Image 1 (tube, rainbow, N blue to C red):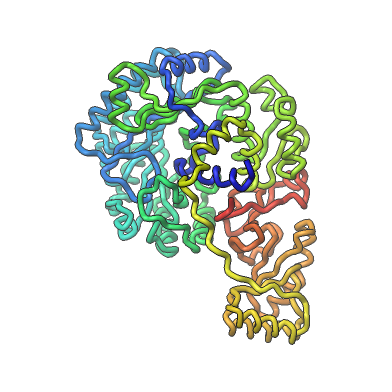
Image 2: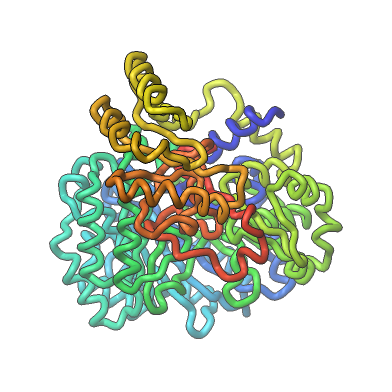
Length: 607
């Protein structure tokens, strides 16, 4: 399949996944709907007989009072209170099916999401957790996390949650602005938030997370930054700053990413870091033990040093039996109940894993989530050699510059480019064919194109008359938004102030010094320094393109989407694209990659 077509297939597939869904292999689009329940139960038995692993429970409560227009997750409107009791009845049947398989095994985490789990009454909360405690064994110190909506929390429910062992409470604020929430179909009374947080802490719930969305339709930069300030004032242990993602599943009017989002997002993170928070994966900020929050997706992590499996229960929940199967429950509540009433797992689609599938998944998640893949760790988990299993793929990616091999590890310098090339290289031909069939045909959902770049006028180092002529000529032909000086060289000092005053009068809004891309970044930074100094002395505000922030003066803001191919941020840490000030690369980065291999990542609109 040509690269252009394959990029389109991946883009269409990604647009139809859940927001923030990890890059698993095989992807859900390749799973089959020909489900044999006995195979799944047997898959769990075989998985549990394998090497020691941690176990995670995830329970999905699919109901909401109403469906927010910005939501891309599995949820349905609660029609009446009886549905929650019917849900608990069906959940009881599902837990009974799996309980014998997990007899004697302990679960490390129990995560409850939705939907809106806090729609359960205090009595239903006790029944809900009581079922898990009767059917499964939770390890001492099991982390129990619970998602909630502020309008459906009250002191009685908080007390029930604490009584049932919940010590990790996520409150879905999304925004403190009533107008933004109303226009997005989310009725919410934020006046109670402070009291809820105080009450939860008073009951001894040790970890509180507030969820905020950045870039909601109708939200402004000012409103988002004000939301962050209000969240900081409540002092949560963790904040989830979720950039709005325009997935196919989102129910509201399409809303492309606003121009203010990324700069404002970086300002928000800078404010939070200044308030004592640390950044994790560019989405979560935490203080204290807030970074230990349990999660319910397979992200290739090994918190205890062991891999883990996930048993998902409830409509639409996704399960992962390590080494044997991935599957998803039926999302439709009626179909889910009907299957369980017949005494079989309520599974809608599945994929039975072969050993090679698991190895591919390991490599993909390690490279795309961690930026590196260790041959030693691969050998420890699979008792096989990483180069022996994937020698041609690794060699091809290394030769093309997408990977670097240093002392037994493969490093991914450019995560954004790697997202395409890693999947293209490691996805099996039959998987790619399934994806092509599902997402490559006419009429498949298309991701919206990136907004057109503003026109630029690239200037050399000619004399004043020549430069003035070119500026006027471009203006007569429709104008440009920016003056670009390649190589980071400005014209001679006597001509500079007058030239820039003329450009500003004619409507040019930016002056860009473009670093020499053929040089290592340290040398390119040194070459651009004299022009920077001259610009500052002349009172000219300039921005630099083509250098990672760690090579720029601290006072100079970074640009967005301004370099060829949109490369503006270094991949030393994926968080960097969401910060105003680069903290610098870690001490071992230069040793691993060398100067020339600090490759910028691509930001919004990249393929």
